[in-house]
Image 1 (cartoon, helix red, strand yellow):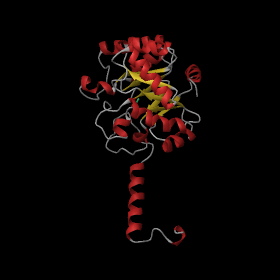
Image 2: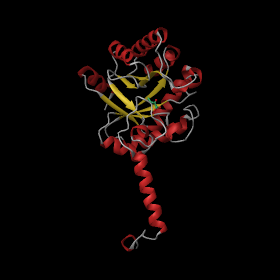
Image 3: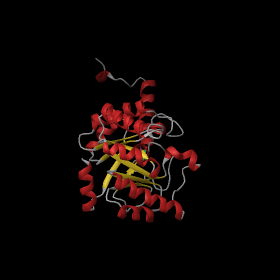
Image 4: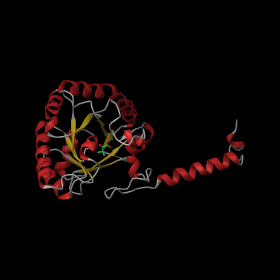
Length: 262
Ligand code: KIV
């Protein structure tokens, strides 16, 4: 998969399927299943590390996780999130961190949250040869400014700013933009207004593609079920059953049996 192929898919009306991944073993299965793009999301802060927010995860921790996904990805493009604090301080620091992530993890592109405010950093990255994915709408690194994870851009002013920001990101050379948790009609307007592929999460069906957090869509995280999330499996129950059966087999000494011994 390449950024050029993603553009061709948008032009041809072929939908793009993206999922998060944070480790080699699951990423290999996801790649073999035919996913188009991986996101090594800073949602790893929640999913992998158990933090309440995405804010604590660091550049080095993202690189560590991305390396495993890159080793697994034979087909899909790998995008790695730039964590909070790694691109906001200055353009120079943003470019330095983006290049560090690309060089040390081997991923194909980086994603960062925000619009006009971070445009100079995005321009500098694109000019330096870094493929950049934008992220607008509910941007979880701003959770404390937003005061929660609610729907974004329901009011006219915020919707207009989002459309404006999307056009700026597109013109600056972002190869794709994620739209998170915004009204479907606005996401459709943005998708038609920009030349790059738009990937939605909680942004309706008119986007050029969709992304979900892998652990959420596999039903591993039963405590989280927003309206936009579909469980495509119920792995939490499967894992608990398997572990329960293993515990019983250890306790009643039926595991290991003679065939499982040397
Ligand atoms: O970190 C993440 O998983 C994301 C997706 C929700 C788009 O940014």
